[in-house]
Length: 62
Image (cartoon, rainbow, N blue to C red; front, side, top):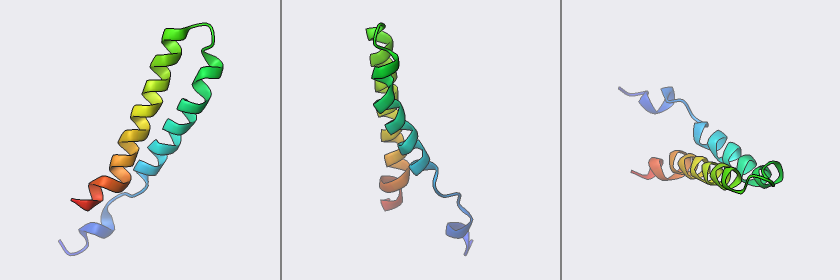
C-alpha cells in the first residue's frame, strides 16, 4: 500500500514517555511510608518510559 506510512497512528510513544517520567518523578513523594510500593511504582514508570522510547525512536529504525 502506497500510503501505509501516512495511515499509521503516531505519538503513542511520546505519550508513554511523558507518563513514565511523571510516575517516576512523583512516586517517591506519594509512597514515602511504603518503601516496596514506591519502588514498584518507580520501576513501573521506568518501564513505561522505556517502552515509549522504543516505540517512538527505536522501532522506526528497523
